[in-house]
Length: 307
Figure 1 (cartoon, rainbow, N blue to C red):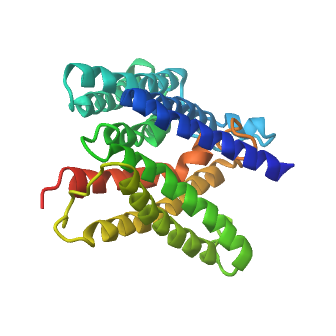
Figure 2 (cartoon, rainbow, N blue to C red):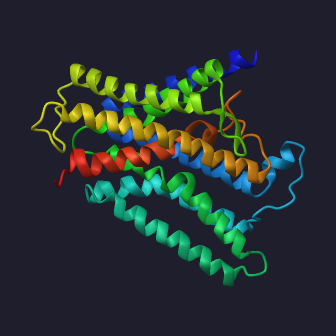
């Protein structure tokens, strides 16, 4: 029954992603709705986890938590609620300048949280301020990479597809290969179930998925690689193999980061929205790290090439 739920939830999740990619054909800005949902739900999961609510829900009272005051929670929720809408508002009036709105909003969050140490000094603490900043950065600020990639002048669809396909393939095959080959543990003190063989399997298949996706995308679209080394026919193949290789590693690293967070907080999952998977953050933890790397590579070496 557990496996049926896991597969069913996974298929629904994939269906939602595919649906939003189709919506991009209507208006690319509609993809921002998906990012907005990730931001709001992920922020809610982080705040509940850090404040100890998840642990209480699981029948395991928290011993040490980074308690956030009500005012700090409101500030963090407000940041997540304004992040995506502000990006598109700025983009509407000043195309390609949306990132400026995100920078200003992020500075405002930090400033407001510092001010709350004075205005709400009876309830706020420095650990709570740090926790609020973490909840603002992870996942909302990191999700800016998807918003920015969605605005690329060329290759935006390919970049976004890589952000979701590579982590999904790397994660799936890391689990499958690890179950079959087993062997030494990767990080037994952090995630006891992960094996070195599984990690290597995830990297191999994640790299292959990147190259395959690039090939299929060029066959079904008019996309032409114009990044670094474009004068050499083999450049795009090496570039996308490199993207797949590093993004697969980042996927597994992102999963380990969240495993550390959950272990330190004494919880099993970040949420319960996705049956047999946990919460949104349990589903996109590796994607957040992989998307950051993919955005940087596209921005520096493929779309806005400076070499």
